[in-house]
Length: 104
Image (cartoon, rainbow, N blue to C red; front, top):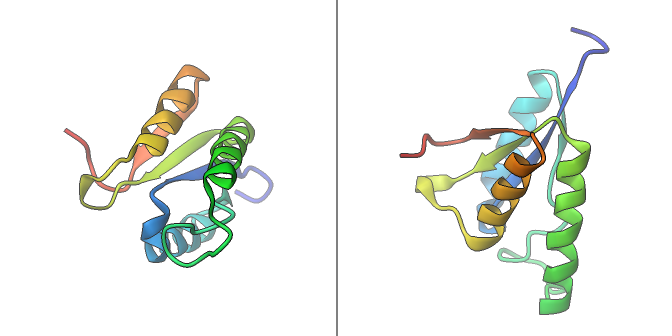
């Protein structure tokens, strides 16, 4: 497995910081290169403004471009508008999509 690492970008609401950290750890130990969010705006960062959110949403799509697939952190099935947009983008660009919790 050494040298054959798949790249995965984590997507989901930043309110689930603990889940992001746990999934990042698990996937890293499973041999993935993990790309995550830069800020947890819904949880603790004061820098979060509407302009920053727009930039970060666009930046996250560039992170999806760099990945082989995305991993959606959909705690209790929750998928917000930004995450839904990222899933649609990933599918449109041919990326695999995996969910933390199965979707209906």
